[in-house]
Each structure stands twice: as structure tokens, then as C-alpha cells.
Length: 85
Image (cartoon, rainbow, N blue to C red):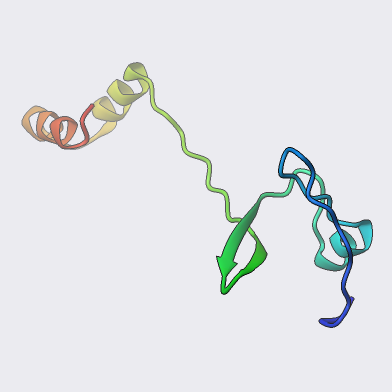
């Protein structure tokens, strides 16, 4: 698909757009891929999203880190306050 190719799509009542198979194939987009939509000068631009998993640590996991660290008890206490843990 080159830059001048266009496809007609309709916005669903729920605000959804289905990308035609030809467009998905040309862009290498597959089901489940994450995208970012930018709005610039009245145009919507889709780009691949970079997704970085965030791990939420339990209190037990935090204690494991503390036991393995080289920080003093006072440094750990200060860090926990700063990080609001």
C-alpha cells in the first residue's frame, strides 16, 4: 500500500473503526497489537505503542529487596518514605 492509497471506513456507534485487512497487512498490524492515536492538524495518526509492563510489588517482595540490599535500616526507611511505601 503506498501513501496515496485510501480505504473507506465507518465509525461505529461505539466510536470504533475497523482497519481493513489490506491496511493491517501493509502496516504489519495484528490482532492484540497496541497502538497510540495522535491528533495533529485535524488528522488522526496511528502508531505502534511501546508497552512496558509495570510490576506492583507486594510488601513481602519489598522486604525481600530490603534484605538483599546493602542499604542501612535508616536508608531503607528514608527510601520507603520517599517512594510512599
